Length: 430
Image (tube, rainbow, N blue to C red; front, side, top):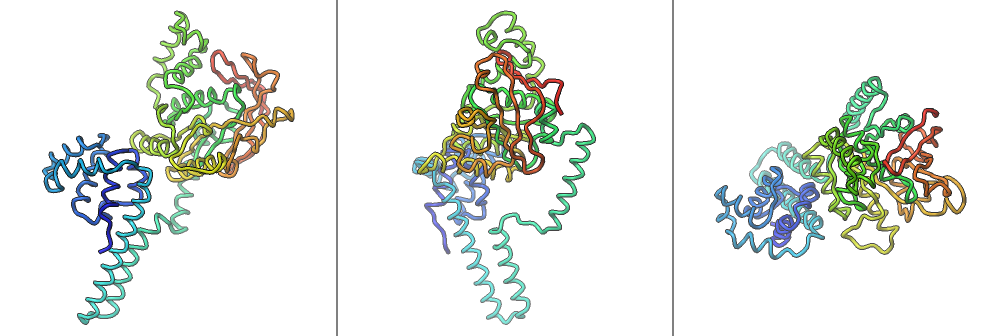
């Protein structure tokens, strides 16, 4: 029957090399797609260990299979070691998985054909044979078609969503994760749904501080999340968040001044247990997606954020930076749809708006690729160039793209206090 021993082994070896690939590979193939029984056993062992939160490599997998009494049956330590040693890269592992799935479907088709021929030659009723053949083909088509749904099922889901959102609106007016800035939340309804949300600003305008403030505020209010930062270390991000909570000078906290450090310790007691996770070690889009999926499965996060999209790398090669960013933005958009939650991406703006002395626009997103097109919501921050170096500066916030609601530059007074890394909303505004 159609199969590829080497391709199956490359998948198993690749998963030992990089456990994060499980979340993309397992969406393409399952245990039954492997032709060799030994490979199915090893796949099952990997799945069991990762679902239990245990790392998988040559040593740990061998021990697990030995404890299950299966190690010698699959070839012993030497075979597991060969799988791990022969795989030098995981860059093609998704392609290998697609190949294994294709060969599995061919075997299924061949099996349906053989059983149909045998039943016909045995004189079985043609109607029964046709029904059995159709059922077999339907199973194959269903496995290839993914998770399409009838419109009626979509109606049921829509009704449930509307009912849930109504309850949230009546409870407090905000449907999704709140930003902590009421004027912004009234336009966005909070960050919710299968959306790619882009927050763009020039350097020094406070976009990272706004993200940190949102992250703490939303986590406190029952919306756990993950921040993937490519700009700062975990300690710096946490210190900035503590400065915001303590309303004290971030630089003096970092330098260990007694009064400010004590205020930070007290702030840590108040917010130390919020359901928020920080990843500062992952830099590729493939790794970020894997981390988001892991945190969704293990911790039930309701949103994820990337700071910032211009620093994200990729294992693939592209001819231009625009093409690369287009791939990254589409991948994040697909991630939001797959996990049914908002993904927030910070982005820098070009100098064009400053040079033309105007508010920024969507097309000011630096090297934007398809970011403008892929984003469901774009929020831009604007500070007059002559105020950008001020410690406390006025900031305008505009929702310039919003597929699910209104667009507007918010008629409210916002101020970014750099020393405490805090965004404040004035009393005036809508």
